[in-house]
Length: 201
Image 1: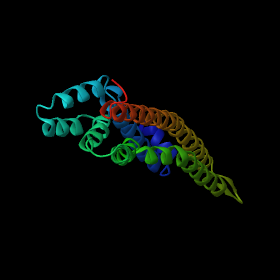
Image 2 (image 1 turned 180 degrees about the horizontal axis):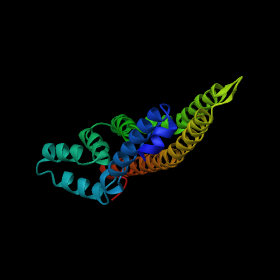
Image 3 (image 1 turned 30 degrees about the vertical axis):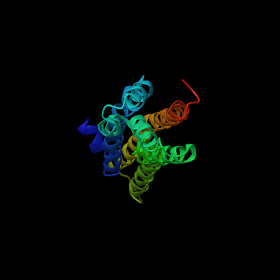
Image 4 (image 1 turned 45 degrees about the vertical axis):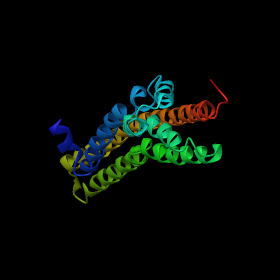
């Protein structure tokens, strides 16, 4: 591996840094965007049931807010349960916007890495081509410098593509996953309003 890095020349170092950041972000988002952590099953029914019993609603709302992103949205609605339907919906929408922003955290960075990695690889290719042209002289070409220029060009192009492809796949996957979670939270929030305002039992 070290021999490959040496052969690829100095342009490989930004690509290696990008690959480390990309892997770290993918692992972090895989852990953070688990369904059981974002939209736990049965949370709405459990929250409504406990809230209607009314033993200690302040403690319930605090625990609900810390529980999960869905819990934050439901907690915002339940805090305004005695207000009008419109105010309750507004508070849910505000909380939902903040939660959606949090779920999208780091995805811009991952998408940027997916976009610029091929360009970074292309930059390495250009550096390699410069080395190749530099190996030419009136007395002939320098085989060692020529081989080094070719290895820089090919290794950097390859590394750029290897980093970009999984980064793009995971970026699109996480974007779709977040969109699905947001839609599901919206549906559960609507059901909460209907439960608390007597339209649904």
